[in-house]
Image 1 (cartoon, rainbow, N blue to C red):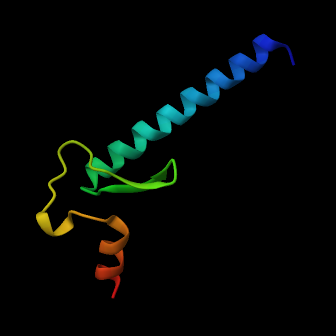
Image 2 (image 1 turned 90 degrees about the horizontal axis):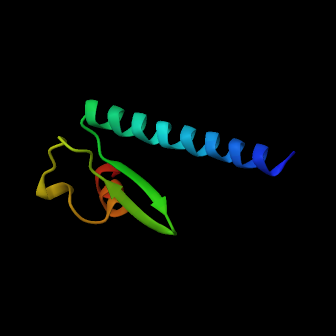
Amino acid sequence: MTDYEVREMQRLIDAGILLAHKRLLARARFDQQVLVFSQDGKVVEKVPDGVATSPALEGDPLLRHRIFRD
């Protein structure tokens, strides 16, 4: 593979990841859900615009998951 082909493939992969991220946020917004994921070894909570949250749902997402699961 030439250097150009590698860069083009990486550009297409990055574009696909960005599109998947946008679709996931749109679906979470539609379903009124909050996204929880790992980024750089930390748990991150992403609240899409338009999703209402209550004070009971603030704090550590993993702890909240354990509380609601029991």
